[in-house]
Length: 101
Image (tube, rainbow, N blue to C red; front, side):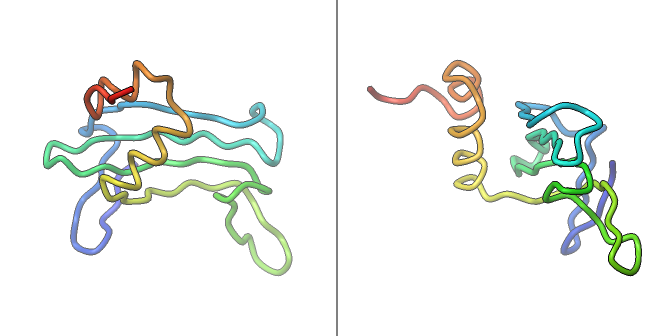
């Protein structure tokens, strides 16, 4: 997916995939998948895809919603918070460096 947000290009094809997380199973309306990417410029972003009852849902007109997807730019602090919540220690340290005990 490619998207321009605030004059910056975000492209899942050219950015480095550094981690992902998901909830539920495909076909469930609450299902979602989030993938953390790192651009060559050092910027992080999430690519999220989800069902009709996920945070990625989109209006289909009237009172109807459908699944959808989005790109969300993240600050380094937001990327670290997302990684702390969703990644294993080894994955986190590979991205952000070793953390003190």
